[in-house]
Length: 139
Length: 243
Image (cartoon, rainbow over all chains, first blue to last red; front, side, top):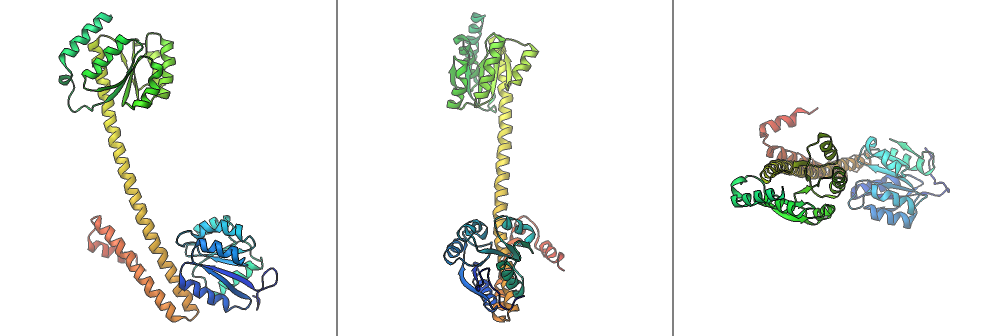
């Protein structure tokens, strides 16, 4: 793994965190900001916020929970892909990959990670997806 | 023949409707159609005499379809005239357009012709003869139809009840899914916090998750107890899958 990850254009990798659980967003922020080369550019608590923030911030990577109140990650994903076409979407979900990953990959997600992944796996996934070394991979 | 029929009808009307129609027989709303007014009158007398309601009379059998759409009868009784081919042509259109089962009143008992009529979707056919014969035939046919309707209604009610129960199960499953998802989310937070040495956050997440898990168990116990399973059995069931 690189000591300092960069996005396709050589800058820091900007990450948008979308999860309705406050504690999960806080911990993901810690995980990401402890890693040189990664920075959190924004947070969203539901699908609508995720779309709005993705459009406004144009992040490199979006960590997207599926199970959110109101508009879910499933609902929001196609629109996120439209408003932020360069962003790579990593779905980070409590659902198991075997049942949910095919559907979200079909909708344009770059990667599916089950919640429970350790911090190293999460930052590695962000870096690899941002560098396009891992366009589609199921875990 | 017409005089004979009219005499018979008069006799039938004198007898009155009630004695020949058991109270248990369902009251039906019936549309009648015949291109001949005299036959239509006979049909009306027979149907009315059996205690059913004639909701519409059509002298143009081509109007039967629209009339059933308008009046929504339980059944239509349609006289098909004497020409076989003309009757077949009529019946196809009537059955296609009608909003209810069609009982044909025919002059013929030719098995091939009856097959043709049946293939066109007619519910039943009645041979037109003397009024008392017509009455008997229609009475049997309407009684069978009423039985069918009763059975169908019971089936529909049972079906509706099953659908309601399925919907209720679905609602409970979705509520349980939300609780289960909450448990997974809580455990994921607890684990991630622990990996980051955020022990306080991990403890808080575990406590909240434990509460949700207890709520799940309580909900399951409540539902199963409501279905008649004893508390003792539920306790054994709960311990049975433990690893």
